[in-house]
Length: 212
Image 1 (tube, rainbow, N blue to C red):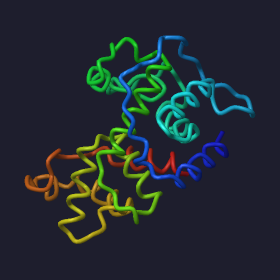
Image 2: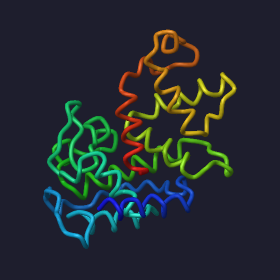
Image 3: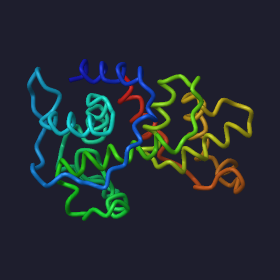
Image 4: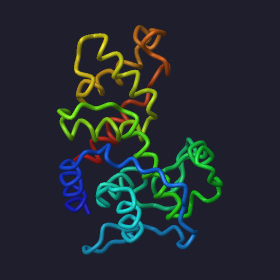
């Protein structure tokens, strides 16, 4: 699994992340049940067929989506976090409601995975990245937004800009995500609009896990 997911990230880097910005109103029918991870060398997870279908619809490499799912839930379709995020892609009830999806549908793998990909697409299209940006930086910044919310990433990039640093560098962005736990930083009401951020270790770890 680790080798296949590593190939996924390398492959995804070769294509612009923010090309995948299609937002479809359709949500697949509830045609499968949550499954536990499988231990077979010829597949990544029990959800490969769903990953392939949804990734194709939205223009992603399905293995990158699998890497996100593995980092979020280890392919546990019944997973639920302390914050209430549910399913393979760890979708929160707030996101479900935003897209008009019943919260009790989040344990349906097809619905959960498609919502996750729609959310990635939304974040990818929310940044104005220059064509010259390093593809790994682009993907890492979008992944961080998926994990912690785009507001904290906006704050970190804004702080980088006002301090004359490269806000398109993941190394720089993660530095300012860390700094948003410092009162001297998060009390800057002009440049910090989403307040204090203490979960930077989780977010940075998530990005590193997907990108490794």
